[in-house]
Image (cartoon, rainbow, N blue to C red; front, side, top):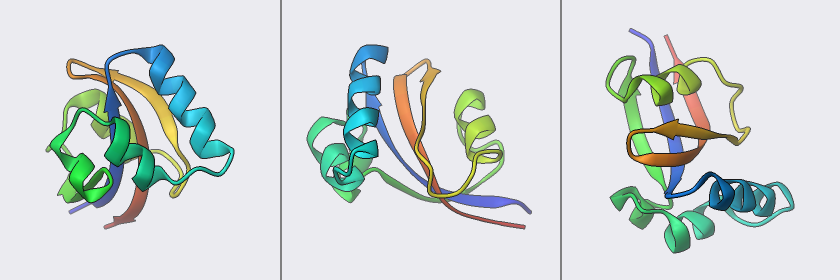
Length: 93
């Protein structure tokens, strides 16, 4: 079964999502930004969601996690919860 590990940052607006993505791309720490800005309880772990299988997350999130390059910040990804920045940290068969 295909599994992945990822971390994310969840915010309310696409604009905020893009601003945070730019900060990460210019060298700011993903974990620190997640702890400060994310609306998800996972922010306590720096946005880490742990390991999960295909279909366990909402569809838009699932599609990114199981197709994106590892260790590259993806997003904004819009779901019913808001806008996410997603980084896939591992994937295995």
